[in-house]
Amino acid sequence: MSYKKNNWFRLDNAGKMYPSIMSSRVSTLFRFSATLTEIVNPKMLQKALDNLMPRFPYFQVNLKSGFFWYYFVKTDRVPQVEKETFYPCMSMEVKKKGKFPFRVLYYNKKISVEFSHAVTDGTGALIFLKSLIVEYFRLKGIETKECEGILKYNQIPDDEEYEDAFKKYYNKKIPKPRKRNRAFHFPFPLESKGIYHIVTGIITVKDILSKAKEFNVTLTEFLLAIYIQSILEVIYSLPPKKRNKLIKPIILNVPVNLRSMYPSKTMRNFFISVTPQIDPRLGVYSFEEIIKYVHHLMQVEIDKRYISQQITMNVKSEMSIILRLFPLPLKDLIMPIAYNIIAESRYTSGLSNMGKVTMPKEIENYIERFEFYPPPSQGNIIKVGVISYKDNLYITFGKLTNSKDVEKIFFRKIRKMNIPVKIETN
Image (cartoon, rainbow, N blue to C red; front, side, top):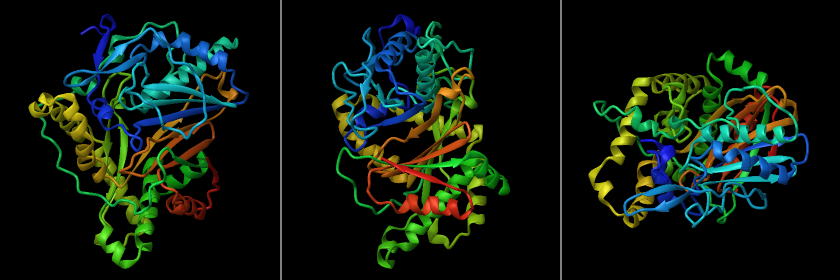
């Protein structure tokens, strides 16, 4: 199928469920931001977006509803950049006529993009933001050389960038993985609708990396272990009767970018989740024990054979005859319930590490920092997004609750390791 010649295309395997589960509590939106060293020029930002959109035709779309599934229709229109006025990752009506599945925001020195998971994942969104910034500075007279993860405005889109890579690498002979257990959930009250609290800890990369190396683990594994230990502390602090009622395994949702395992150029969703976990019902764990469990579980689950099982499960679920025959209005009723049962109830929280951002040398000193805000979700009211740029690591807690317990414990534990942390909130 040549996507370039078609005016419409299907949502990818992971993206298909998101339009049906969208709500004021589950916006499906995540954000990447870049803070510049100067005030953003909105007219120039709009011009950069106008120039760049033909390079990303799979994002220049509107969501439409068919009889059985949602689908994307291409449009010649370009989104208008908006001045940021609301809480992040909220109040974007993707299903409304004429709306795009993403938006570009600015405020003072900051440029932000917010994407619905219906159209892409973190890798696709970050490539878009980096490319937008490069085009913005080109218009300001600064040309840049080729750089990994950046697409230039004058390049021709590759047909493979449209592909549903889940289906490309699906192997029907591989069995599904075992079902996951139900997970512990935070017993904190929900904030009012439309409010999404952001707490970011800023840490020097070399400080926390050297500490992770002391335990012979990756940075992601190190942060996961600290997070699990923090959640254990929350559980142990509950009154005995409440603790006994709520206690379940702590299971974290950790997205893995599959482009590092499969030779795919897709700019759409291509990730699966691995699930490091600890069961507090089995006893007390030292930090050393937690980090050992996390390290070995991650090594097992980030294995191509295990990953292929996850892909099989995702694609086989979509291929279910019963699900395919349900008309879309019925899917819209069933999907949120199914999503809660098979996904949200199986995770305590999520931690997504987008890694180190690199920019062309010609403009890297015009950019102070990058940040990543995870998508809000009623079932997992606290999530963590991690990203680094130059010398700093940015760890962001996105919360649909006003409780500050979890991030306080988390950053306190890091400080106790003699690692300085600067805290910022919205």
